[in-house]
Image 1 (cartoon, rainbow, N blue to C red):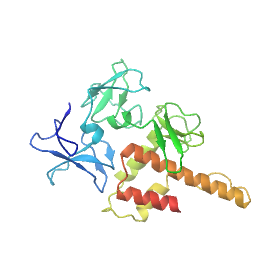
Image 2: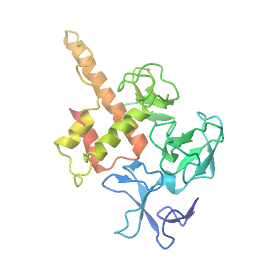
Image 3: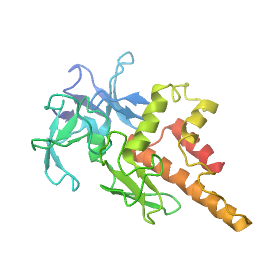
Image 4: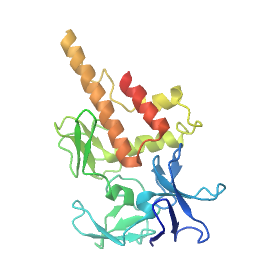
Length: 257
């Protein structure tokens, strides 16, 4: 399956009605990709007909027949559906494989969502903080407190250059998906208290470590908490695309507190 590209802003795709064009858009609300069935926040292709809610991530709109990733160590082939029967999950993020997927040819094949396969190997925040995509955690994930994800796969992770901040890709993705399913991000673009708490609840607690007495110690703890916020938001952007106005405003509020 491949997209017939007519230009960056207008395409046709074999997964959708042949009479309909898909237009490059910047939605102001989250959407579900009709290719990989995953959540999206950023730029995508949407059907030109207003009454047709067909969306495709950019990565899903332009899949290559084959791909390679250093972590997979073998050639991967694109499929519109996983060719193996039974439940399948992405070996990068741990989420179910329900649509577009890249899979290797081993007897026990690995599966990767198109978007996960395109995750940046290095992320850099405005303050210079760097995160590196890794196969194995040097220490426990700061969210789940484990080296394995909830479904007991190793999964990929983002780790800061200092090694102090480690987060499973799966943990960050699960958090956003859970809040999305509960409707936190479907409030007509408004940032309300529930939206704010949806992300706030995932960030590290200021009381997670005992704060020693002394002004300098408290200041250092606050700086560490602020940096953790920045890191979480950076990973969210990498996973779901460029933040929409809603997510951008949430990030600004979180970091400013």
